[in-house]
Length: 263
Image (cartoon, rainbow, N blue to C red; front, side, top):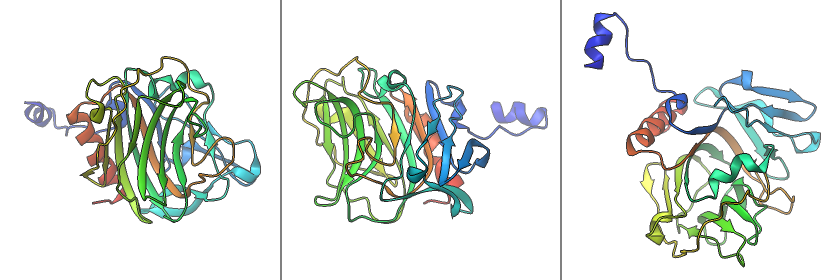
């Protein structure tokens, strides 16, 4: 019906945009260089395109990632040096949706340059087990793609899922559903990497926290500077509050794969 109506009016169906996602919280798109402000040392601000203004910034010129130096599918990406580059949002309260009972869905496209060190992708707790937080990172000793949600109760948060799946030195797209109040423990963390469902081995059933996380969101490392620096480049990151529908997940993944030339 929509196609027929569009044909009558001589217009095609508009392409999918992350702005079509219900409960979109934040959207970072390195291909849109107008959202990137540079200063001494590299990226000073990576602006949020969701309309919420959850911008990522870095005031320390020695910790700014680079832009305009690399591409993926001929589109700009933001390059992190694997030493201390990190971008951080403001206001921890804006990111409580990542750890509260409502859950979240997050999408990432990145270029992983090294698989030999612990590396953080997204974090609101400093990778400290006693903090209220959301963590997504990889561990080289176990080759784990690791997803954790903490609630500051003795470090025993409602989600700790090490997937036993390596995220290698390559280009990747993935999404993670975080559902810390799900009655089935294994379904509290549902990750997919490059179109493949990863293991769901969470066994925790602790009640999720409704408190604000310890820190605002950081991308590319740990906020206390003690390791987990990301070595690679981020192309696009999308955060949705709540559990995205299967249709919206498919639309988002197809959009990201097409845009960034991934299979």
